[in-house]
Image 1 (tube, rainbow, N blue to C red):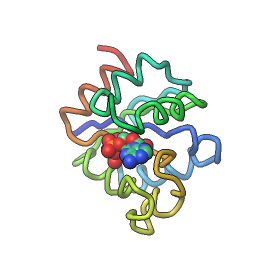
Image 2 (cartoon, rainbow, N blue to C red; image 1 turned 60 degrees about the vertical axis):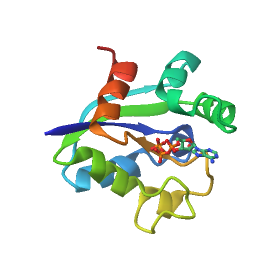
Image 3 (cartoon, rainbow, N blue to C red; image 1 turned 180 degrees about the vertical axis):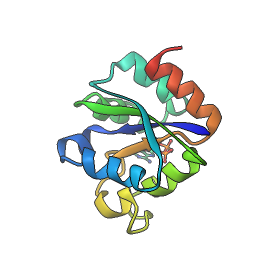
Image 4 (cartoon, rainbow, N blue to C red; image 1 turned 90 degrees about the vertical axis):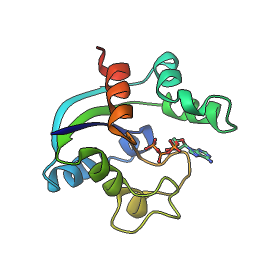
Length: 133
Ligand SMILES: Nc1ncnc2c1ncn2[C@@H]1O[C@H](COP(=O)(O)OP(=O)(O)OP(=O)(O)O)[C@@H](O)[C@H]1O
């Protein structure tokens, strides 16, 4: 059984899309195995987005992620990492297929509703960052 980490970002929480998003994962028989709601700290986000430090959009991304509550979840099931990324759709909303979360609801490159870990290794690291060892 594979495990991944998903974040429902502040734009999706503010737009009232938590239920709609979770429904799509559960519809594919993925199981929510941990869940918490919080406004993330800068420290946590710097760890989570370490690979983007120094990029032009880094500070904007952190400010956006600290702008409100997020829902952080572990999601478990066969091929959970790939399944979640498929359900989320392409990072850039204009590239995301209709029928994906970003394709159906996305209107902004930074505020793109959801995050899903990009590999099982990243998932392990991110679960440690958000939920502790
Ligand atoms: N060129 C950009 N301009 C502004 N924000 C960006 C840009 N590229 C990425 N981002 C933001 O940074 C996040 C992380 O980028 P990354 O390339 O890791 O995307 P991803 O792996 O598809 O998305 P996520 O990690 O959120 O699932 C994106 O989800 C988006 O919010």
